[in-house]
Image (cartoon, rainbow over the protein chains, first blue to last red):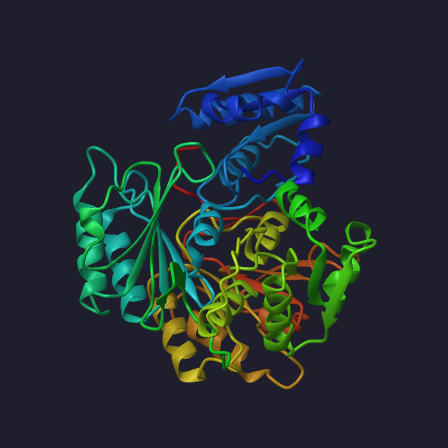
Length: 229
Length: 229
């Protein structure tokens, strides 16, 4: 985990720390003596609401996300709830290192040129919309980061996504897979479009698909920016 | 500036600190007593080469970028040069908070759904390629972050880009502009597609264009993820 000074300071200054229980375990060293509001997955709305209620009651509350709270995290929901319920609490969003950046750094430098970030989870967005986006960015030769590529029950989306990219890019296009990055179970795999589906990809993975100029250099995945080398 | 513990540690452990002179000034407190290799803008290649040479001579070298070195930063060039010149130096890329995340956090939560990151600088990429990418992501309703939107000499690209988005999204679509974010001259402006061109946008700005579901909520720019609120 790459903690920022700013996030550490915000936690130190808060009386209440709210978040998904698993993430709170990772920062247990920062939260001693503080009131903890933790809950399981898929309880985002109630967790946010509780955090806002406590803030309105006068507490300073840190609502903790993994990665960047503004990218598939909790920031949007907290702001939406505050606006919907007209809760006049001051809110500060503190950015973090999003999984794209963390995984890209472990692979080399795949995101040196224009890129797109697309989640394959169709829980909140219809698959047809996601599919249309994948098709557009595949055709426009954008490096593409896939969040939530696969879960136990959801496997077809990734197959379809990779097939779309294979229609527009050579099968040798580099594909990087980062799983549980920043934890002890971290796994980094550099493969290509043709072989990506054979690799282990799960709930905690992120997949980065290169564009037509991306290369494997030594063991690095690099998208050259165009400098003369 | 949001410093990570990890980057601070890497700088502390290095004997040589290389980077663009202006960025090095911002971290002067971390570099006392160290050898400094600084140079001006557009001297990226020689700066990287020098850093690699010193590393090969046995020094631990920190090559400093602003934001995330892996996103329009120096990581790719360093890896390309190391591979091209077969320099057997171990390289670690340390991710940072990219400008998209920093500006998004100041605006609210515009990046809660799928998004694209596109640089309007045609110094290293032909404008026709950039234009095609803009057209694709505008049509696919992706939130879009424009890096290098405008410079003194380059103004038409931004006009063209905004016109492309206006063809696919209502003129009331939120547009956020962050300039010199994280510095004392920081400016944050929330406007919309119709009025964005009238606002001050320059070399140090980043522009975020909402998708069709993005909203202005109180003074926040939010792209709702789809939770029922």
